[in-house]
Length: 254
Ligand code: PEP
Image (cartoon, rainbow, N blue to C red; front, side, top):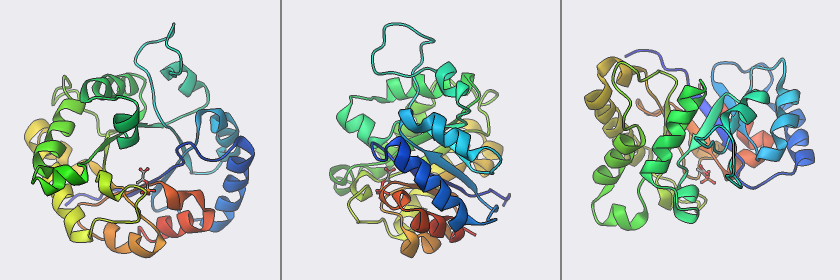
């Protein structure tokens, strides 16, 4: 099995003002110390990107954005372009988060356009997929996860697919609810995603593909989750707001 460097991302959602984000970065640098075995990504609100970017200069910590639009510029109120993100040295972009799908009408088709825009701009998309509780109870986990994967990456050929893509498996029922998928439940779906990736894009791509787990990850459960063979990191919401807790999650990913 090839080595896959863990990738741990802090999705702050609509939390932290610029001043609060700056405070986090200075505290987090101390908490993290010289830990370098994982890729660590901070994903603040758009207005805090520039400040966080400046504060991350010279550290190994990377910057992510919470979305990207597929047009270059124009009359698209509320959206953000690749060029705007590049200007502040964004490297990763979270796409298709369940909150975007649930509250803002994102579909697999719009998610697909955003993924392509991110790839065209040489960002690393973090494509979020995962089933709701009703879908899980109806026995539809495989159907939902596979279709979100296939449709989110539709139109990208085996020859074109870059290793930069990251998948975040985030069961919707576990996001912000305190309910975590058990390590076995999460591993089962991660293995399914890797098999699906192998079927669509080939074994070589699938072996390198990094698949994060997201859904109430915290210091106390992170080691066991990321100890599973197909779990290559975490996308963390609530627990990433606290610098000590988030640093603990990073340290637990060894
Ligand atoms: C998320 O927003 O991606 C997430 C997983 O949130 P939480 O960790 O709060 O469940």
